[in-house]
Amino acid sequence: MGCVATHSLGIRMAMVLLRPPGVYPVQGDTALLLETFGCEPVRPGARCLDLGTGCGVLALAAARRGCRVTAVDLSRRALATAWLNAHLHRLPVRLRRGDLTGPVLDEQFDLVLSNPPYVPARDSQPPGRGPAVAWDAGPDGRQLLDRLCRQVPLLLAPGGVLLLVQSSLAQPDATVRQLRAAGLQVGVIARKSQRFGPVMTARAQWFEDIGLIEPGVRTEELAVVRGVRH
Image (cartoon, rainbow, N blue to C red; front, side, top):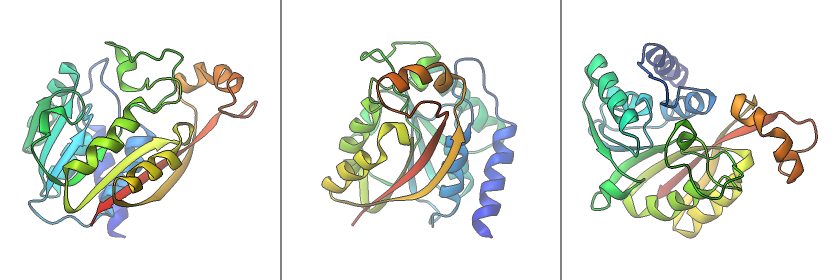
């Protein structure tokens, strides 16, 4: 029951978070990652990295569990929002602006959390600005995921854990293979089906055209990948 209690705590906290337009909201993927994180053993003082923090809900959940948290995002608006939410909840979070792991390349962490952009997009170039920065990830949805698979294992301390959430449309098996090749012990530890939201629904016909989904399908499976450095 401890996992359920932690998940409920995270969702209640998310309900009172500030989130201006242009900052990724707490949705089903974030909720699943929060629930999974609630089941992860965490020692007080563990060094935690939240990559792509958005409004900061994952960072705040980690800080509430006693972690020393660093939150990274490329968006100034997201970082400002995360700072305000940390201040609102009186939780210590160190904020850094930059591209994925760039601001913390000389550090190691006991836990890395990430809900990266993973929605397949027609444009092979990532959006430079606007709300689509939070979800567009190239034609196969893996522009950020592939980079995370290369970079995050280098940041994990011995015994360190990565928890990452993504959609089935962006090939969770590829994430598992790449992290395993980087030396991690890896598995998909949580799955959840959900209906397409507005962004996915608007692209559903294109997904059908390129064979990413079967005709008429309007659901995706979310997956949480867990990797451990031994």
